[in-house]
Length: 181
Image 1: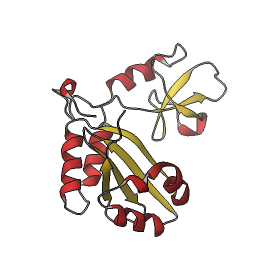
Image 2 (image 1 turned 60 degrees about the horizontal axis):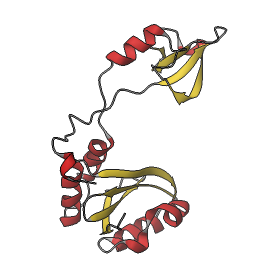
Image 3 (image 1 turned 120 degrees about the horizontal axis):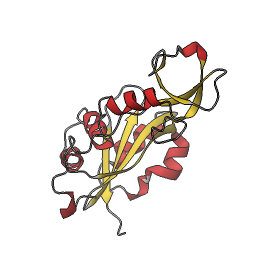
Image 4 (image 1 turned 180 degrees about the vertical axis):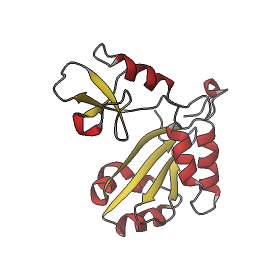
């Protein structure tokens, strides 16, 4: 949500540390390594590492010191607002799209962003019945796909739904009034 405490917020100030998967060198338990393409940041080849289903945590006492240093030195990554902004640029022009783009540049809260089976997302996460603008296009997108992506964004007045079709179609921006907290 955008408020006066967001003064000074920008994509540059909201960049996030780089994230890496975690893994362990086969036969060398007790040390977690940061995974990159082809192996670990400290140089262990991929075929000698068992990958874990969580992210590398530099602060963990079991973190490889060399991976820790390299992870800290890695370039930062765009925040959720910047990543979504870049996708929404491809949406059809309109007031809802423009208001969402403005909100994202000011730090509007990306409360949810996921991909999955359309029926599940429509039933539990989309909030299609709360939309007052763009509802028809959003519903049509959900009806036309078996899997889809969606993001929910809140700013001071609106709750936006961004529908991200997997077929390469343009994102769809819809919105409804923001519910009181």
